[in-house]
Image 1: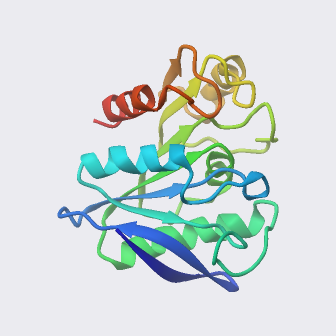
Image 2 (image 1 turned 180 degrees about the vertical axis):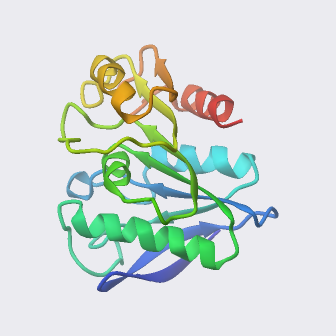
Length: 201
């Protein structure tokens, strides 16, 4: 794993890049809310990256603009959508053909609003999309949404609200609820990794 920098719209971002032996598969993984301490080192983001690495994917974990040593400033999710698109383009320029887009909490919210029609994204994964905290409307149908995971005790990403909105995103998406887990998956990271691994295979 190494720290790299790549350009985004109007700024330069730092990221963690972990290249795999399989150059065809990669994943961009986005972090939780920067105004609440979220960054590329978040423990849930690390768990997601760990699962993708186990499956032979190259992973790219960017710090959104204004986070860590990334230039720019917090942009209410607008500039952050550009950050995601530039991260996908960066992986694509490395020769990665099949790219997954995974996000945790705020990262899932940002990803849900990114226009992917011209992006080489194969699957989207959401971990704890924060429907109890942030407005997901309007979000168009997400044809590439493969898996959504939350915890039964997650008040920021309530399972009931996710289940209700999921058919409007993609009725074929796999939905998993980890019994007992809260928004931070404290004590449940291994179970989260197991659920992600099974769902991604």
